Length: 416
Ligand SMILES: *Cc1c(COP(=O)(O)O)cnc(C)c1O
Image 1: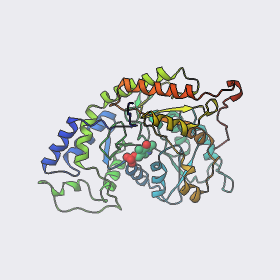
Image 2 (image 1 turned 30 degrees about the horizontal axis):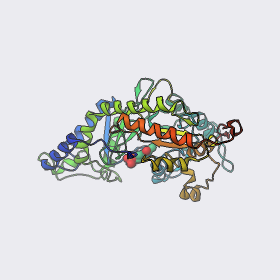
Image 3 (image 1 turned 45 degrees about the vertical axis):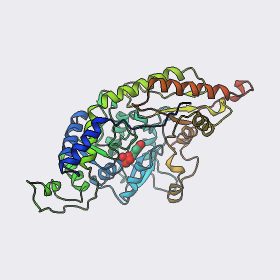
Image 4 (image 1 turned 135 degrees about the vertical axis):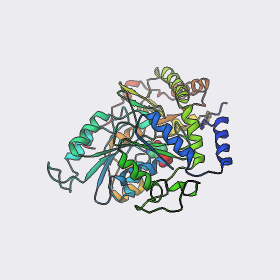
């Protein structure tokens, strides 16, 4: 039996050499390699500024802080994301406001954003034009690497004077209508966590074209110290620095940047490999009626961080959890992206969320399985995964005629 893990980082001799070179250089924390990584990343994205940090979580936190978002403010995001997105809003003292997703793309639904802005939930004052809006920003998440409807989101942001901070943890190399993700919203945040399309073990990057804001985020990322404080231990550096703000320890080390520089050089090659796998899955799985393969919207370039299938439990004898167990018995590692945040005990307790609040997120969550997708996965492994999925599906068709097991679409609740 084959063993196919859910993910393996694509680390090779080049990364190892670059790290050893850094270790021997005498400079291992933020320094020349980080500067080089930032410059090359900005060039790749086509943005003015790239600021390397120790995570995407840190990146999003700094972006919110740089815009002065804090206590009393609200920030719109999706419940269908990793905890970081909402958590960083809470870190600033602001309140996350969830808006449900489009069950086809798994991305936040712009119509529901507008609905939420105009209709406060029961008990709060409805928004009227001219009244002060507590909502200050939108944080769209490009789930799996598929860009959100950015034209619609930017239009809403413009009309209600909101900032757009993109969680692009999945979306490095993705494009929306010919524009690279990282050049569209006010600020974009990338992740280089171990499983992401480009990894530095842990790490993140902030991109923006706003020079003042970039300067502010850079200062906040290293204790609020005056610019180039990292140089204070170099020959040209000075011992003197000033604290200009209440900062954080969010800087990226040169050891991480060494890996990043090498990964960036081979990013396009790694993306090509991901696309090959996606083509295998698309081709092999499209004939299975009991499974929905990911949809790609026209006019976008998908980064294919994740390949999320949705099973149709009503057409099968087994549910999603059992399907995952079957895959695991065959040696195939999978994951679920994501457990909706409003179902998390802490969020239920703190904000009073309950099941049923975001029906599309819950609908997808009950059906989603992320398949192995990474540059180290061979085409034949992908074919094997598809073969096993076919086998499990076939072995679990209900005996009764299929017409009695109609699969309804997700229920729709206005504003959810
Ligand atoms: C991975 C991930 C993050 C967090 O990235 P870190 O670099 O680990 O902080 C944020 N958002 C989403 C959607 C993610 O998948």
